[in-house]
Amino acid sequence: MKQTILTFYQFADLPDFEEWKPHLIKIGEKNNIVGTIVLAREGINATISGTTQEIEVFLSWIRKDSRFTKMNYSESISDRTTFYRLKVNLRREIVTLGDPSVKPSELVGQHIEPEEWNSLTSDPEIVLIDTRNDYEIALGTFTGAQNPKTKSFREWPAFVEKSLKNHKKTKVAMFCTGGIRCEKASSHLLRNGFEEVYHLRGGILNYLHKISPEKSKWHGECFLFDHRVSVTHGLVEGEARLCFGCRLPLKTQDLSSSKYEEGVSCPHCFDSLTSEKRTGLRERNKQVVLARRRNTSHIGLKMPESI
Image 1 (cartoon, rainbow, N blue to C red):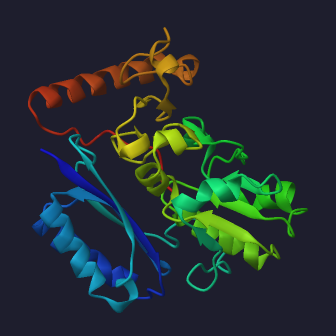
Image 2 (cartoon, rainbow, N blue to C red):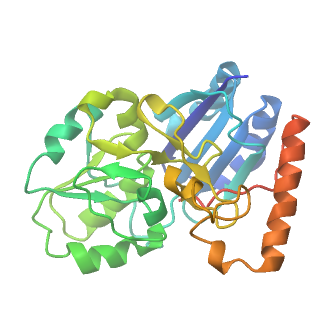
């Protein structure tokens, strides 16, 4: 059955975020919503799925609160089961940077629509940055984008200090999967003296949804933190798969490697797996296959840690 997948976030003053958790769980379970929701004092961040009608009911409940009335979202459709259950997590930040002085609800860069992105990034003087983690960038990115080579968003300030501190008067443009990471990254730059900061509205997903392959400056696939693993133009599911030995996304050439074993290992982790770990992964994969045959879910499978 086709599922509607909704990704949304909103930075807002939410001191009552802990009180939201039981309400979201109750209305989510009532409407068969699955996915992951993160709540913090600074707002909400979520990727959920369900039928179109169920999603509309759930989102409408959130939007009744004046802080989220104008909350934007990215929507796509998939035949694939993207999540197996609903999780509502309470955290210090909805996207973890580790700097409480950065407040996107008060200050962010200038949003650029997908239709204007190619023109902006064609400026030879602009500094274009992919703010995602290195394993995400490995699947695809925009032409000419810098790779900060970070393993988590907490490393962003160190990257800025090392590589961008001499560009405070230069135009800086950035992008991420759905836009949330750039909200905080742009706020961080502005608070640290950068004068002209831009970011792609709605992120890569919005760009791939609106820009045709013929006009696109995107190359590769866009990594996702759900069981689709990646999407391409038109938000069509990509060819990438996830290694459940190390939970890194795999390209086509990785899948054809002699070190790839479905559900067990890939070229990234083959040499580091102990025999005990390999045996355990094979048993888990066996249970996954049996669950698929029974048309049930195996909830032991985990995705890489999201932002």
